[in-house]
Structure formats: C-alpha cells, structure tokens
Image 1 (cartoon, helix red, strand yellow):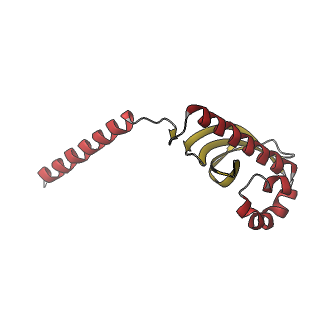
Image 2 (cartoon, rainbow, N blue to C red; image 1 turned 180 degrees about the horizontal axis):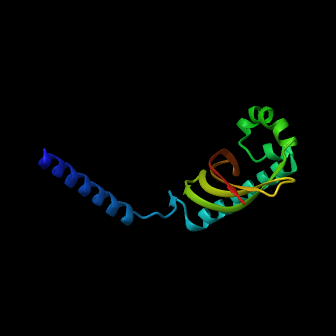
Image 3 (cartoon, rainbow, N blue to C red; image 1 turned 180 degrees about the vertical axis):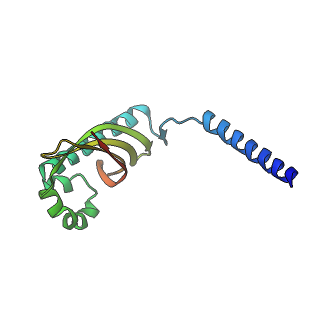
Amino acid sequence: MRRISAMVLVVVTVFLLIGGIIFITTDRQTASADIKPHHATAAAEKTERVLKRNLAAVNAGDVNAYLQTIVPAQRAKTKAAVQQGLTKRQATVKLRSFTVQKQEKQQLVAKIDELQQTRGQTGQQVLEANVEFVQQQGVWYIKKMVVYNAVKNG
C-alpha cells in the first residue's frame, strides 16, 4: 500500500513539475492573428475610444449615445434593458486600464479595469471586465462586456 501511495505521489509531482515548466516558459504576449503592428495599434486606439464614449454615455445617463457604441443588431433589445437604469444611475465610472488580449481583423478582446464611484458616498469599487469588440463596415462596436471581478476600494 505504501508503494502505491509513493508511486502516486511521484507521478503527481512529475506532472506538477512538467505543468510548472510549461506555464513558466509559455509566451504570454497579446495574440494577434494576421494583423500588422500598425493596424493592431490603430484598432486598440479606436476600440479604447469607443469604450470611453460608452462610459461617458453611462455617466451622463445618455441612452442614445450609449446605444451608438454597441452592435447595431443588439440596440433594440438593449434599449429596453438600459432605459431606466442609465437615466437613474447614481454612480460614475472611470476607465483605469485597457489591455488588448486578443485581436483578429474584425474582432478585438480587451481586459479593462474601471473605478466606479457612487455619488454622495466615499467608497469606490474596482471593476474588472473583458470587453469584446467587433468591426462592422469599418466601425468598431462593443459586442459584449463581462464583468468578472468587483472589489471595494476604500
């Protein structure tokens, strides 16, 4: 019984060691498929501007400006969902960081970090999200945003 336990322990240790080596040696650069460096930079700048316009619309409670930043096919469904929420919103959101995670010719995924401040309160909240952008007819839009972490800050 001890031999089997020892063998299992050795096998698990070897797998963990191999996994650690693979993890450490893996290149974690931004993934770009068939994109020239200039185009990658231009797309990152354009999508970041779209996100900043989106956040400005959220902060202003401007539903129409918000809808202009999202994919046209989703606007009708989204308008009904955000109509009341945006106009009565009691928080402001500020973009702290924008990092491209993956890019293709007509799609881009970015990791963002936002700071949310509720009006009239001192506490803040840090929101981390992944934002998927899509380019349609030469214009970049937000296709999807998934907030995966929210932490109180102060």
